Image 1 (cartoon, one colour):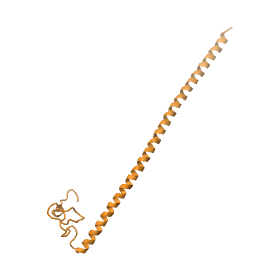
Image 2 (spheres, rainbow, N blue to C red; image 1 turned 135 degrees about the horizontal axis):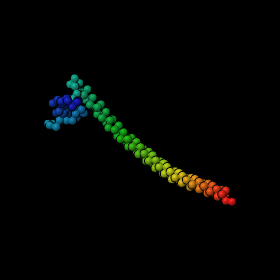
Image 3 (cartoon, rainbow, N blue to C red; image 1 turned 120 degrees about the vertical axis):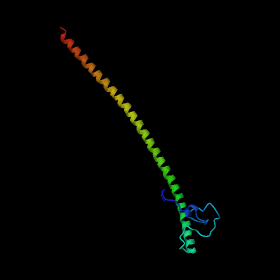
Length: 137
């Protein structure tokens, strides 16, 4: 039923049968087992009883399936939560390793800069010494 459709007076009233499986019993009056108005009247009383029994059986099966799905859903939730926790821990370890590698790289750069500075200083010093020796008589 769409929002534009109206509910008939019969649907709004509910069913007069207290055992109806299609709609809630009406809120007014007595709820007798005089007959469900939701099923076609072409069915015999026995056919209606059989149909109601089948519907009730399906409702029970549906409730059991829902319970099983709740259990499975919870187990799947726990498994997903545990997997997410493991992934988070793995990501934290990877970040710690990355930070350690960055620190090691920074130390290596500082050592390389010191070595380059020392080499340039030594080369300049040696060049100055050679120039001084050439100028000396």
